Image 1 (cartoon, rainbow, N blue to C red):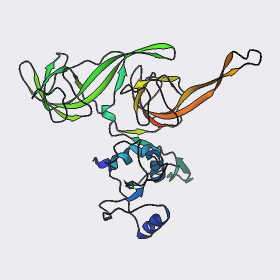
Image 2 (tube, helix red, strand yellow):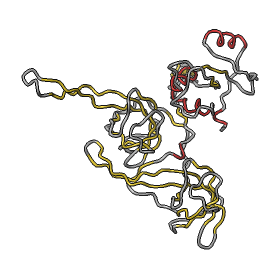
Image 3 (cartoon, helix red, strand yellow):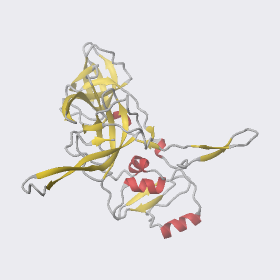
Image 4 (cartoon, rainbow, N blue to C red):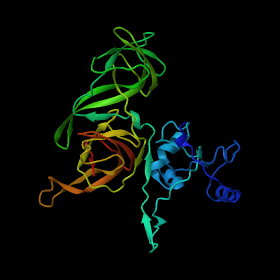
Length: 342
């Protein structure tokens, strides 16, 4: 677990007595050792979500990915069950409200400083993206050392270089695949190439006609003919912008082509870096209409458009020229491709 996930705080006994008696916190069988494993245990109640618990304990719903990662036994962040105990680590946080600082002037003016919230997502460096054209490949996988059809972490693989770049021994690269998109979005055809990052691979040595490499971290199953590209390290912490300028965008699809997009799903929208930046929060809207009978034509139904239905929120993670990669943060209703983003 990365060091940034460790949350440290100092507690006094009177606080613990109050917390355990009045808020429903539950102790685990393991002994709490101040200074070594700061935190406490909370018993999930009916209706709880990681989003809500993040807001409750950290004063920011955007910290839920860290809360999820601290509890390895939660396999799916969308499903947490009443009665289950989870560990809450407390960290020293900057208050999400104006902080007063003194300016060293004769007048001794007090100037408010606006403090912004941040969003942390450790998997930022292997989210997919959509570009107008396919990213150049440095090579493709020709075989796994033992002949396995499906490859994963710690497998030795052989790569045929493409000649479009150099695979340097000791350096880490991405394994990826591409898929041509042609989707009907907002009445128009959206065309692009979806890139799915599957694993990290470390180059071991060059041979005459091939390269030997080690898969160091696989996020998805790897297969023969999968491609190699440079490794791009993205910043895993974003500054949150909750009220950016409105945009007229649509959801293209999810990373895994799900028909319905759920909470915490990675998806793509048809607006790129010219209009959006990572960290911006937008609403997901659904066109809302009803069909009603007219008084003068009882057999005919008239379509009446109502105000759009807000079905969820998303955060922008990464931008390209024609699209952006986003995460669905929360949903009140089902979300589908071609839903509006504003």
